[in-house]
Amino acid sequence: MIYTITFNPALDYITQVDNFEVGKINRTRTERILPGGKGLNVSTVLYNLGIENTALGFIAGFTGDELEKKVNSLGIKTNFIKVRNGITRINVKISSNKETALNGNGPQITEENISELLEQINKITKEDIVILAGNIPSCIKNNIYEIICKKLQQNNITFVVDATRELLINILKYKPFLIKPNKEELEETFNIRIKTKEDIVIYAKKMQEMGAQNVLISLGGEGAILVTTDDKIYFSKAPRGKVINTVGSGDSMVAGFIAGYIKSGDFERAFKMGIAAGSASAFSINLATAQEVENLLKDI
Image 1: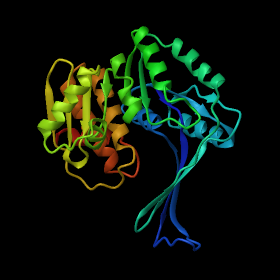
Image 2: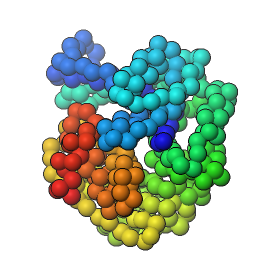
Image 3: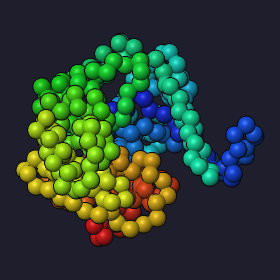
């Protein structure tokens, strides 16, 4: 079983507004309500690619109930922990001449809730895979990723981390199977300016020296680079297509890579699946489907 962990999931209220004006009443042209959060995006694309998985995380209030209902309706199993204080956040996304977002805070997660999550993790076996994705809310201590990753390493569980800055750097010593920084995050991490693909490989290998096994670097429309644990380097440009929505494309790349690796055990195949899934999500208003990924694979 694959488990994804999302610490602060959300209901994403996505609207299109013609000529949005601040300080005035605006009418929406279209609107959708979808489950949001990086881990849930990964879960959705994994399921779309035929990989069964269970979503873990925290929910609260009536919005949490609705989030769980929507995730289950997609075919994804859940084992969310219900928090007493607050509600699952609603993130408002307004698409107009410019894109505007208003993100909620989320519920108050307690030490008791964290203990419940750690108990769930204790039941995960070495045949499973855990994917940690996204930032953490301010009510949780910054060392939570370290606590979880240390426990996963001790139990010989394969895990993936898609996070930034200290959350990522501090867990590398626990040897994650895969991390997925983008070029800008590499620059932030090492406080440097990256100018070439060769530079990207150099700093990806530095992350390997710090503990990461495989490093997948997203380059947006330029494609991606993979540096593997067996010292191979892969590069591919992204397939051509009209970018409609980049939200969730990085999460889709992680899901595509893991799905490809589970099905083939081959890094090159996994790399191609990752790029295809990330691009398919970018070319659609929704997250990548199996058919969309398959259609793009031949162009990679």
